[in-house]
Image (cartoon, rainbow, N blue to C red; front, side):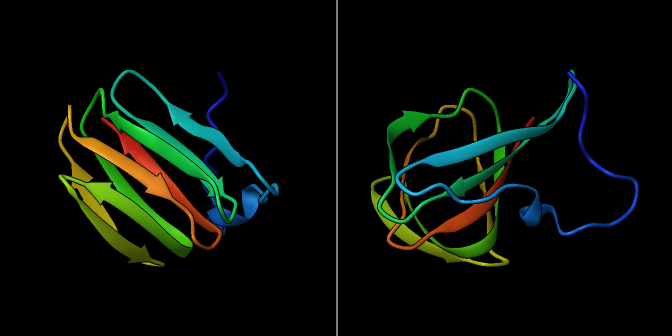
Length: 105
């Protein structure tokens, strides 16, 4: 796999677009220590409850996303980020479209 992170600063969220009724994702870096995936979640889309296989950080790049974490819903918006330990149950719903980076390590 070719890693797709530029050495020159760029607006990373602009590298994928929204697709109505879908969630678009693109792995932009993957090695034995870290995987970074960019997600564009269309309005109305959701991820059912699931767990993380590794430790993770979520960083909201654009819009507003609703995340279910440890029995409670939270609203995160552009610039917000949070940590998830391995095995954490969580879910996502998009009341509006949003983009985020997921760092798995």
